[in-house]
Amino acid sequence: MYARLTIEDGVAELTFDHPPVNAFDSKGWSHLAEVIESVGRNEAARVLLISAEGRGFCAGVDIKELAADSSVITRVNKGCYDTFAAIHDCPIPVISAAHGFVLGGGIGIVGSSDIIFASEDATFGLPEIDRGALGAASHLLRMFPIQKVRRMLYSGEAIDANEAYRLGALEAVVARDALLPTARDLAAKIAEKSPTAVRLAKESLNGIELLDVKRSYRFEQGFTLELYTSPDSLESREAFVEKRDAKFDDKGKGKKS
Image (cartoon, rainbow, N blue to C red):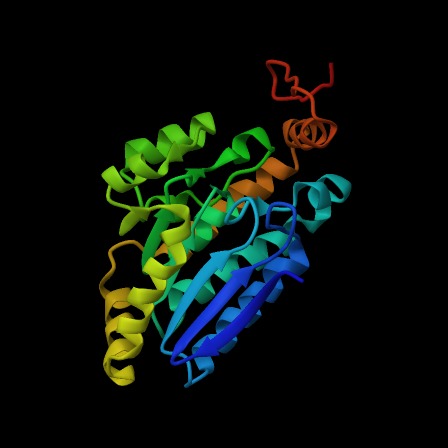
């Protein structure tokens, strides 16, 4: 199981449930995209709420799958692109309620959403540079200022929920046990509005947004694919799976210790 879906009183709830860390393989990302697209076509759904079970919201892609077969990167890229696009293009508003770690592909999910709530223990980061990859900076740019995004991408450092709120990315930061009730309250309010008005509002907001997040993410993915063909990327993936520090020479040729 990757996630479960319920629809009640106009509120669709998609809950990630893929232990241990809600990191999805290529099939998982494709499945999420299909489910989210189906919600958008369902007239019974007026708003979509995304949350998660377990230790964190989403740890991104399954690095072990990529370490075992680097050719899977094209399917992973497509699955991530389709999932983030399905959220961004979803005809109804999408609310993300994030707790714990929000990493890599998790940033793509929340950054594609209309509204983000977070619990006090939430952290947001793009650790891809330490995994031999790139990605989701386009979606981070929908959340944070460009200099903060650059630091996070270059360093792999995460920021906590309070800092994310200070930078304007979050609607609210609440206690862990208040996260879902808070997000559900807003979802219920939206579900009570005119379905036609809300869908038109979503379409109009997407149309006037200055950043074309899908086009910029596709541009990013080209560099992710290029990096995956390098020795440094292979060394990063192997080091992650083997739980050791990666070693690189000064010519961009990864090498083990």
